[in-house]
Image 1 (tube, rainbow, N blue to C red):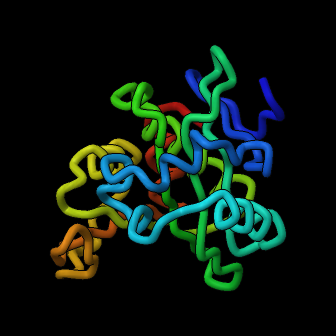
Image 2: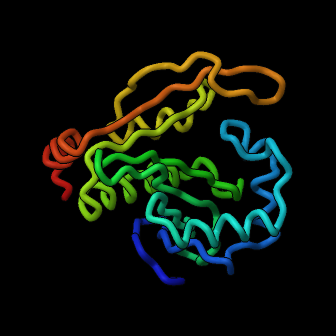
Length: 188
């Protein structure tokens, strides 16, 4: 494994570094299918922009961005982030991109979310984690539900993508809900 930070069954999460800024990674951020339900691929992405982003997140405590790696071959297949961390309110937003399409529909989103929720609550002492999705992103809505998140509400026409305004939905989980859920399933 390449500098593992959080280890799951199929994947592990490691710090995102400038070595991860490859042509493959940059291409994810310009791919309309990969970015259908996020804010990427709105403006063209370049190596310089990606490098600047990776360098900036390594210097802040408002965001924790980790590379998602497939355990069997250590390949970088996506990123996951706790962003907009508010250390006073003990809250953050959880976001993910699985850019390598060969790894779609393998349960990676759920596994990565569960690793990050454990990290957020058990190690960072956060109290609330939220995740916003477009209403059309059924896969990520299912990930949120599988992870014990509850729907908070719909924001009407809150995202402009591909020439139209679309609705988004926010899911969240509180530390108490996470702990209660894990005590019932026998997980720590």
